[in-house]
Image (cartoon, rainbow, N blue to C red; front, side, top):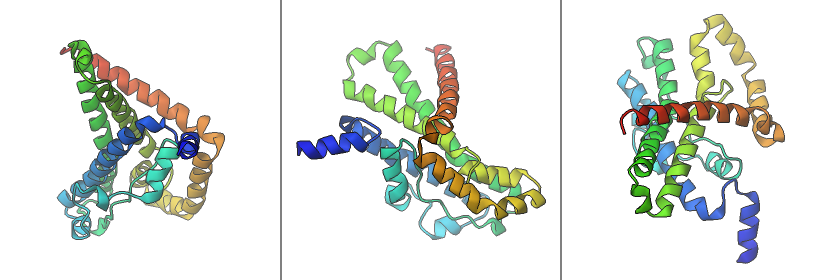
Length: 224
């Protein structure tokens, strides 16, 4: 058993004692993220996700095994993408942007809510009465949702940021992007499975996360 624990500790991104917090956070974060995509698409007239049982808050319908395992090991990952049929949209480009961005924004909202609870417990002194595991959970909840917000906005396929860029550019540029998409995916995979992530993705994620966390603190300090 000790050997198993030592092995897991060596490959996991987070301390093994925090693993339950990470798993619970991922169940919430991934589910809300994909539900936000599905709900937005449905409101714009696309019933594809609903017809396939993806317009739900049931985590089983949204988890991607590889993406979930990767976040435990590498610190970032993804859920199973919601199917979207753009032919149902009256304005495919505008609707496409909103559908794509609502997933990351849902994670930003979750991080904001988590930070609000965390800030309230600290500022009110309630943290002294709260169990330490609650504070640990909130810390991981905020960090992971911020990571998912920033990570999914990176303009590389298959992430949401890439889909947003596709809808922002002209049809001509979009066609050229499609031609090179397979190579872009390769670049993305190389970055996340090699030490390059320490010099590319992680510094970006850290800088953007710190900006928003600082903004959260400013907002809540005005009301508490």
